[in-house]
Amino acid sequence: MKFLFCVGLITWSVTQNNGRIAHQEVDHVNFHVIPKSSTSDEEGPVIGWPAESANKDELQKLCKKIVAKL
Image (cartoon, rainbow, N blue to C red; front, side, top):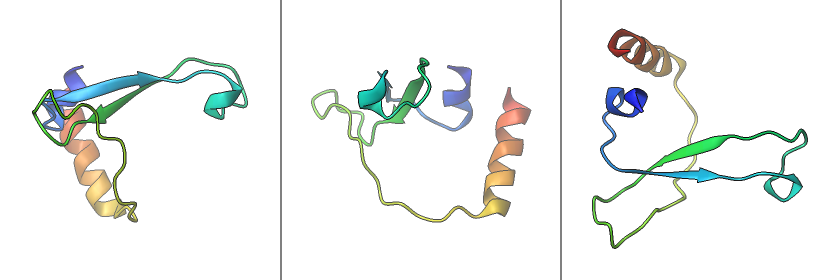
């Protein structure tokens, strides 16, 4: 969970999906940490956000920031 604090997340949800219904071609276990858009417990997890292209320079900066804090 240290990673979450490195990127500034204070509220999140964790989901787990398994099997063919979860679009797995090879059976395995994985967990998804999904940031909550609100600190309100009443809102619950909000899954969905606009897709956008990633800027590689910005991703490299974020990666360096995370590694430095870990």
